[in-house]
Figure 1: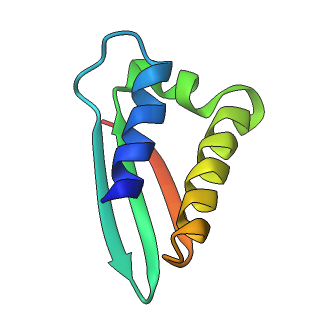
Figure 2: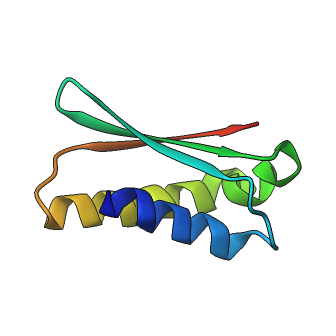
Amino acid sequence: MELICLTEYLIKELLPNVDDISVKQIESEGDIIIQVLVPSDYISIIIGKGGNIANAIRTIVQAAAYIKKLGRVRINIDSL
C-alpha cells in the first residue's frame, strides 16, 4: 500500500489539479505491478521528454520497494 501512496503522490505533484488519477496495485508471480491511469491530456507530462520523468518515478518507487524488501516493481503508465 505504501508504494501506491508514493506513486500517487509523485504523479499528483506533477499535474495541476487533477483528481481523476487511478493507481492500482496488482501482484503477479512475486512481482508488484502498479497500474497508473491518467487523463490523456496529461500523459505527456507524466512520461516526459524521452521518458525521463516516467523513468525517474520508476526509479524512486523501485528504490522504496528495495528498502522495504518487497521484491521487483513494475509501473505501467496509461491514459484513461
